[in-house]
Image (cartoon, rainbow, N blue to C red; front, side, top):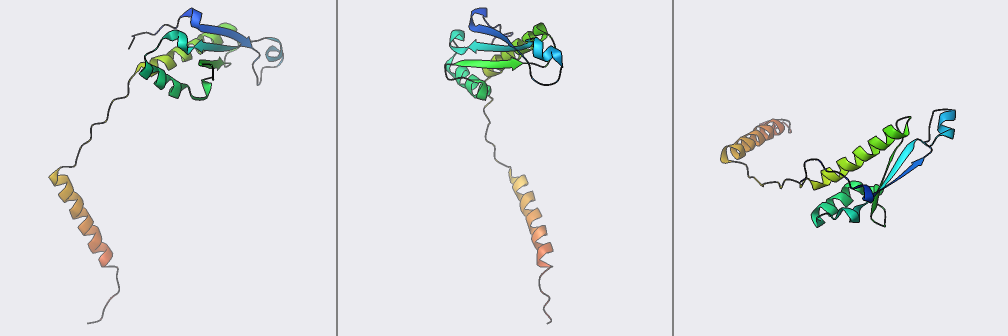
Length: 135
């Protein structure tokens, strides 16, 4: 895995769109929301990393093999652009991390005995709740 993954500039396409939500006239006039499209095929990723990235991207993955990230939290284009790039880089970095395989384990003898003792105690408690017979 690369220490700090740098996205190639030729793989990114930037667009600025008008943001929605509160903000008054500023929202209606200024296109501050940043929308980045990353061409995944241009990254030349390993097939396993590519598959993990596709799963991580989810609905942000388009049919033509691009990831679309939109940032509209900040009031300036520069801040939204920086946030979108950071989120995109974090997504690609996370895809480079292979999941750790789980090692199957079995409970030890003492753990099994302890579990069975607990079950016996619980069974005795429940048995005491049964019908009372007059002998």
